[in-house]
Image (cartoon, rainbow, N blue to C red; front, side, top):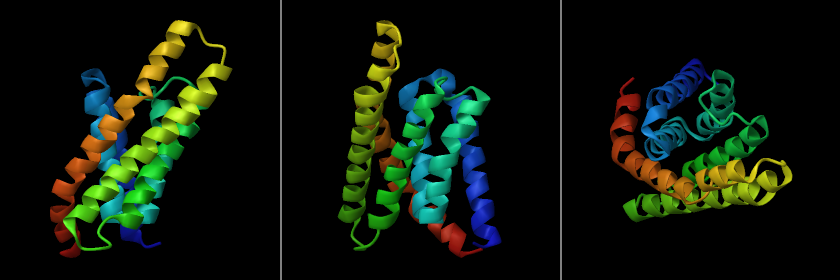
Amino acid sequence: MNTKLITRTAMLIALLVAVQYVTKSAGQIVTGSCVNLILAVAALVGGVWCGAAVALISPFCAFLLGIGTPILRLVPAIALGNLVFVLILALLSGKLNVKAANVLSVLLAAVCKFLLLWGLIVGLLLPSMGLPSEKVAALSATFSYPQLITALIGGGLSLLVVPSLKKAVKQQ
């Protein structure tokens, strides 16, 4: 690990938490898309370790600051979903130097993140938590199809901004 990578990772974690705070009132689609954009940038510009650190640390920071889910048992599942998203992007995107491969990596990463979050949270955790049915319904809605939509939007936006960011990073 070098100083630039550690600094870049810390800046992306701080940016992600700040963006969550600023966009919280804008709703899940806006906030989630911004979060996924930053996760994708971390993976595609910073690499596997940067992306993994941002994916795993940021949900716990958001929880501690009261801007993420208020249920601690869900935070590790969110971190795992983020990790799957960034690992797939970091490991697959750009390997073939074909734009279609980058689009496919975003699609695959978004679908895998959605399926993992839906399976873990909606299928496994929520039914075992003894929450009121209204709370379960609201959380189930949050961790279902909107996760796919926000991951697709954030991942898609990253394909637009990452080439410029990579050029800027190389010039340092």
